[in-house]
Image (cartoon, rainbow, N blue to C red; front, top):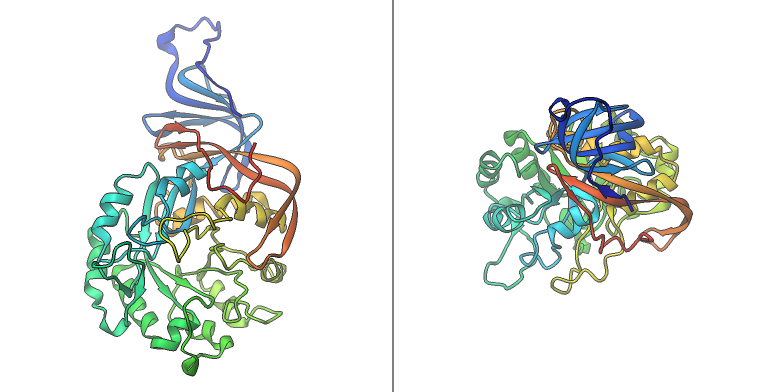
Length: 420
């Protein structure tokens, strides 16, 4: 636990008026930000990063944190969550998977659309302490007469693209891209119509696509696409900056599928600027991760895909994974810590085109930070297929600073970690 105390002024001979005045100072932490990895002091004032230095000049602060045993980095960003609580049956409270899970910004992937966005904006994004943004689903079907209605999929040919485009134009702070499904269930129903609609909307709005990969919805067997062709078809509709989700999925129609070597088309797409997201969820396979990492294919972003039970309302009991757990697993698989931290800070900030505001500790940026304990020990992690992974470290959030305010997360949903 980090001790919080009111600072004591040293006897320097300086008058109080000569001291810099800050709201919070975080001292002696191991600071990781982009390629930076060193021990630094960080000063916060008026909700912004005010100073960062190996040793701050004399100051007075309302709160000081001694972080010499901890990692300090920009506020973690979870690019894939589901937080449309009570409207979707699998939506979780935004602050449960946000600030109280050590995450300062979350992005809801596909739980809303023009049909429901006003409620999402008012009751989720507008009420949460966590910074909440979203990628609306392009072919969302919603029955307002159903209590606690779940997300359904509409025939893309029956979707008017104009409300989607207008939604993004009217809400640029919240709407940062669009979600679409590129998996066997969707393709067996509508072929590539969903991707065609998504490409049209995203191109006009000038925003990225986030594409679900790996079988999800029930497949019409008579129209089942060959698994090895699904990703090839999807790639035809993507442009630089678009994101392929669930990159380490173990599904036969996923990015790796049953292949031992990554397909040349995927490598070419990555070279051309297509991005990969982990999207842990119910898709993450250690075996696929090892194969792809051995071939130099890493996610650009790490996200959790945390959500509640699909069959019962407002039920988080089955949830047994988290963003910090996903981060810890990838480090246990051999990924470099600094690169992994970038995948939950500056990289998703760039996807959101908010890299001057979040995901950074640059002076003048918003004071969203995470303070993390790297706990040494003998830990056991599991993937979605029940495979085991032994680890010597796990990363656990201790504090967050959100817009300049210090918050201690209760961490209720970090069930995949051993908390002390």
